[in-house]
Length: 206
Length: 203
Image (cartoon, rainbow over all chains, first blue to last red):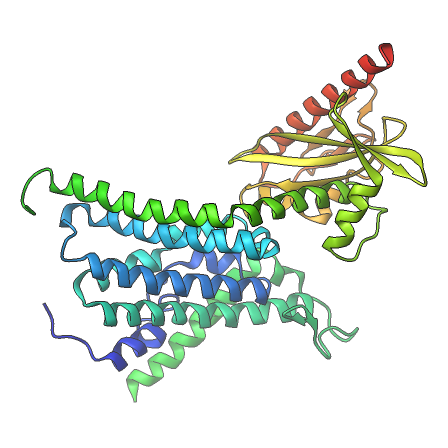
């Protein structure tokens, strides 16, 4: 086993150096689907970050007892457990949001980021770093998604979090309908990946 | 213990039982709230099936629903009353969609012919494709169409086809959802019409 990574490095990896979206290109299905309105994205990000962090911690807790040949089954079970909790809470206390996100809450189970982190990190590391790794990978995912959704909602609807923005909601601005539709997400995602990778390349050169 | 061949099986059983029991407990705790929310979702769909009704919030939806809608078990639908007069019927429909059940309400005017509106309270179709049946753009198409036109039931047809009085354009890329929705809507409207006729014969 490789020597333990310092906490600071785990955080930086999740947020930037190994960012799930623009470095590993994982979990982009939800990136494309729920980013047309900032509020939906925010709830999705919080849910995903919680599920990732808790799942990684639990998988790490169980790692010494889990037989290697059935570890994927156990991981799926743990992830599903937390996702169902999130789903239940939304259904009970925020039905409107539950309806907006529709099947995407359930689909968090199949989000590759969680499984990826459980498999790559949590299965071989103690609980605390595993939790931090999950938390920061989730946050790395979240900040890219939020950036995309801010552009999509602003350009596509002229609002942010449902509030009309100056200039963008006036007659001077023609809403770019395509930004709200699924293809808009492709352009937004591609642009963000391009931007982040360009910055990163400059970083490594200097 | 760990190297025994049956260990993974027992382990999986134990861990599944553990996590499932927590979930069952949580589901029990939140059941009441979830049911209330589902009932409200249903009432909202009934009210939305008549787009002329204005409302501000959930409380008002519930008030409108209890005041103006009256369930009639003989026809399996709700009567809609406006100013004390029968103004239409809210006919529920449900059936298997592409992934899961689709449930909704179709509002039909008192003439038993003209559609007032359509609303859904449960659907889990593909997001971005089939799920778009829940969007205003698709639902608005039904307003003022006929449930039957020259002996043909409602049709949900591809965007290239021209429309007549009982056809609407399907969501492109959601063929399966459209086919199933068309079939289940027509089936339940038919059942309602038959019940209406039976009731007229034996009042």
